[in-house]
Length: 321
Length: 277
Image (cartoon, rainbow over all chains, first blue to last red; front, side):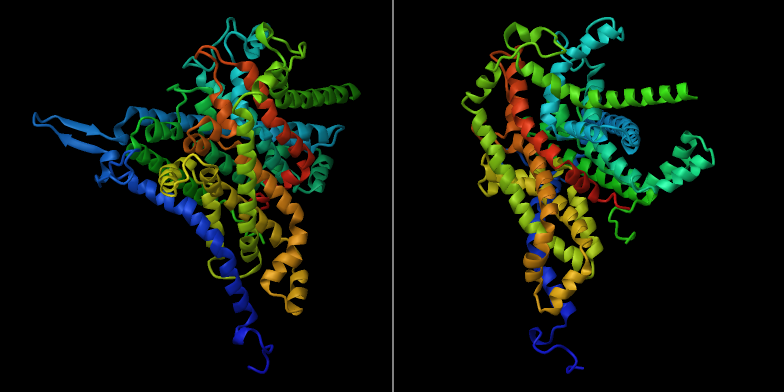
């Protein structure tokens, strides 16, 4: 055997072993970095959520168990008092806001994104120009888009009110971001504007992998384009669409910056991320905020697992190889 | 029949125009506003009417905004350099070497890129205080690694997986070590991918808000998104829309130019992560 191996290869290690050893050293720095910025802070956040740590005294917290989540106390009079995040109406309001925001925005973005992608998949003059144009909302920083739209949605001088008044869609000027009835619409409008193009690009990538001859065959058979879309195109791009939707959904569920800047302190739009940060930093309820961010993490983790399991989504792209 | 066709093509182009207007108008309107000052700001103009650079002078001549831009450039550049350096070797190992647990490792990296940032905020806050980095650029460079690194590793891995195996085999036959293969054989082929992922990571770091807001405490250590969010007038009621729009245009135009130059590569990079199925 030993006469067959190439002489002098690192003291008898096979090529494969040698490569695996190198791979370990190549991966180690990256894994160490990820451990420091992701795993460790996450574990610390979870730990903090079981203590009464405060912002100014990070090391002075005592273990208090699940009290930040739910604390049941029976008073001497026999009355039972529930405290903690799980019975905090502000928290459940934030959960509801987040879910509503995520579902509506991702749904609208997927539909609009698909429409844009179908348009871009057709051949016409100036297609390159349109594709360049839809990249612009994606390239604009979220804070900048929030400010731009805050100005356009301004109640007195905003152009949106002007356009809607001229078109007769509204009868008087609306304070989009300030009024609790419309704040969520304002946030949704901006989010859809900003991310629908991104969805369109992902959908387009899926569409371009559908072989053209399928469409030609359908055309020869005289099948209606709408039927072609639902029976052929949609099933074929479903895997790409499922992946795009989960990525967008995760982004939407953790939304912070847009809402923080566009509708500050509005209880109609406050999401889980916003309320967690508020407690962590602004209100000096460090441990309480940690409990809320831990809950957010748990909700996201459960959601992703269910989605991948039920939708049989292949995220790694390994099995298709 | 031909009437029907004409109608269809009119409808199609109307849709195209609607898409373009929908995408471009808000930024166009921000530019129009940024050139208006005083009472001109409060007229609603659909077309550019004023050309006044006062807002730009106001923002760029200010004490802190130029510094904020420098902060952003420095932080985003160092973050990208660090992420690419760590990611190139790691993605070689993930793409080209077979070892047990590779699939699991890839999924873990993907999972980290989906982390809600708020979930690590408390822990990172403690870490940054412990390392004495609070209110320095290094706090942000450290924390931005959480989203730039998994992303660059993931995209570079997909790129590297597609490189022909023959090149590597030839190098191995010639006795090249893995390190030589990466630096001498793969790196020259990877340049386009590095530019794309680097640019995307740069945009991510340039736009980040939550960490920048939490880990800086002074005007001069802020990055541009935080500075723009915090721009305020003499009173709460008086929001300085002109300077805000000018600042917005300043930080956005370079990004848009870069994105338009590299648009094909960016689309390829964005879709490389997972949508290959």
